[in-house]
Every structure is written in structure tokens, then in C-alpha cells.
Image (cartoon, rainbow, N blue to C red; front, top):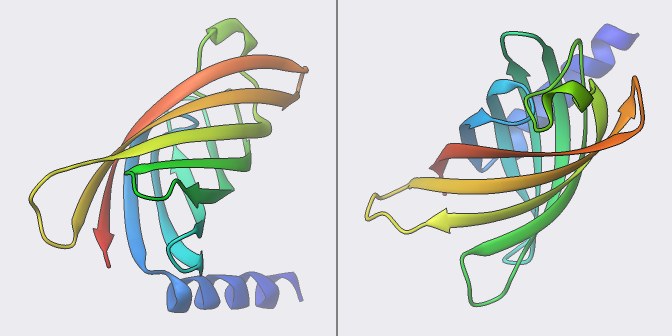
Amino acid sequence: MRKWAWLLVLASGLALGQKAEVSLGSPFGLQGGLRFALVPFLAEGRVYVGAGLEALGGGVDLLFKVPLTDLYLGLGAFYGSGPTLSLPRDGAGQGGVRGVLGTWLNLPLPLVGVYLELHPVYYLAPARTFGVGGALGLSVGL
């Protein structure tokens, strides 16, 4: 039954996804995912999976656009098989919640966007601690 549920989630994600994304940075190194509209022009959802030198994992983010700007703010959760990429390295955990502070970089490319994000993180596993990470990403789609 679990395999069917994951297949349904994957198929619906591909059907609803408006943008395909690839990013480099926090939390796992190299991430790939989908971004989809929840409330047009106000809120988006993002699902991603990632792989790095020390961990495999994935997560979800809820992103809110700041009107009349290229900025967005969000909240997300993630979990992986090992420590994430963040500072300080000795406090990096494998699961937790994070904030997302992001901006789109204005490049004159049709259907291609580049974004930069900062991630304040609160780790829940294996120990409760704080960290900070960031990512640079490429988004393709509408």
C-alpha cells in the first residue's frame, strides 16, 4: 500500500508542478524538485530531494511571495540520512525545520529563473540545535 501511495504522490506532483528546480547548497548539496502554485501570485509549495557527500534526503517548503518585489519567505521541513550542509558544521543534524528567505535574480532569460536563498535552520534530530545554510538555484518553467 505504501508503494501505491508514493506513486500517487509522485504522479500528482508531476501533474501539478509548474517549475522544475535544481539547486546547490543547503540542506543536502545538490537538490532537484518541483515548485507549484497554491494560491496564485501569493503562495507556492515546493518538494525536493537531494544528494550530497554525507547525506541523502528530501523536504517540503511553503513559500509566500512578498507583493511587488522579487522576494519570498517560507517555512519548511526536511529529513535526510546524514548531516546537512550548514554552519556550524559540528551542529549539523539530519532533520528539522527551516525558514526560507529568498530572492529571484533578474536575468533576461525566458522561462528560466535564478534564485538565491538563506536558510535559518532548527535541527530536531539527532540533537536540538540551530544552524544556517544557503542555496543558489535554477528554475525552469512558467
